[in-house]
Image 1 (cartoon, rainbow, N blue to C red):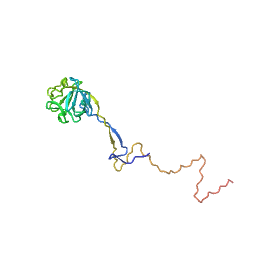
Image 2: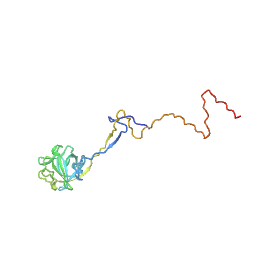
Image 3: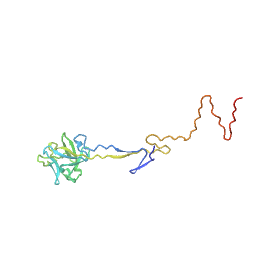
Image 4: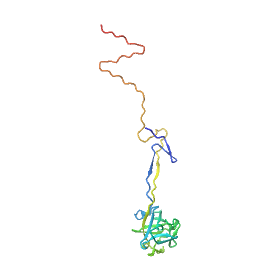
Length: 233
């Protein structure tokens, strides 16, 4: 059996005999919460948000936020999880723009603290609340225009039905599993069966067996001959 060398190099690491490279289990994607609704707000997911009153979508278009958007790229947002129950919503159609709640209004932000939103599951819909002022919410009128964040409340005007357009890719991490190097003075351990035991190559031949009543011929040193045998009488 061929045995591996005492050690090998891989990606700058010393891998001992018996080491394997395995796919580490991928961690659960980070999401805003544990409910089915909040699990839609998983890091990297792209979602749309349809308002219950306007029946239209929250969107960023021409540098402004409105609640009267069509189902298209301007109404799609990439989720960035900012902590348990907290997200930031980045426009897919306008990647530099985030939804912000600042100065009592819903507006376009640059991803800073005013773009951090608390997302709450209110049953079949979600509500967005400012992390800086918990009385501010995103609200939409029936026309699609925005309500004042200070007066939006948490009723149907502030409720949105999320839909996942695409999910974040799952990355499989390949990690080396390294066996500990044996201490000096101890034999190296190898995977699988142990190496074959070494035995002496030469063995003395077994004694010759003779039938009962017969004896083996007498052995004489070199140069000597056996005495001549004469018949009886």
